[in-house]
Length: 415
Image (cartoon, rainbow, N blue to C red; front, side, top):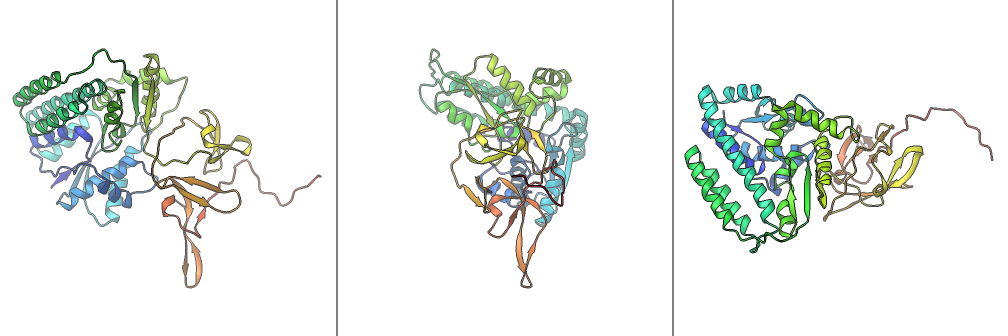
């Protein structure tokens, strides 16, 4: 059995150390890159979120090197689609011709322990020793990332802190004994103390919020923390592995979050949506200059008309939280969040004749019926959510039938 797992930014260093100390035969995932993302997206369901597609891209590179088993975390509670990741990833890989096994574990301490024991055959003492190494490295990684967030906008020599970080993570990746990690930690903090900064410099503060995988992996979010810091902005991000573990181990933390956001969101949502609102409120109370909410989905462009209550058309940028919009099932549902992002790249313009014309980014899914010619006759496939980039001339885009309408045979027209 050769294990692999999903790449997860700098945290990958800690997970590699955990598996090494447990004596697990594994192939580390390749650092996430454009090619891996593209390969993962090609065989992933269009409607699934971006992290799943990245995960599959990570697995593919390891599978080519001989990995035959994926270690996959899941979630048996809440609203996140992470609970279905393993089944969907297994199906996608299988249909693409890759037969691999999955070891799936829930995020409870007991299940993590049992699955690590199953995968490694290690003793309780070995698991405890490996866990100590894991948490030691994790604490250093998170602390270094926070220090860099503070230093970047204030450093006198631009890029100096990132050079220190690069060296630190490389060295940390090679050390797997507590004593040598502790010695390295002192060396790292000494190097950081030598970075000259302007302590009196006034800088704007921005909070980064969003789904944990997207906000913590710099390869997924295009190094947004580094870019903002180099522009003279101090970035804060509460969401990290320790934050998430505290929610699991300390149930009252999750209760506190839900109580605080109750006036704004009473239901549960995926993508750490409740945490995003909680963090946003906190940043607002602390006088931050703004927030950046990272989301991995496709977007419509400005001025795209959306059907709102009473069947009126409204430009998408004017839609407000609390308004009701028409869904693909023909029902009007309240908007719980609105998003806006900068985008550079292809825009697909769709013209279905009449008034159904819109523009969107390539990955945005639409409910589409593909058409094709067979035996000189046009055939239409079943409706399926498909990225707009895969649509072609002659396909059919579904329009919802409002549930409030009833079938009638006639109507009276009064002038």
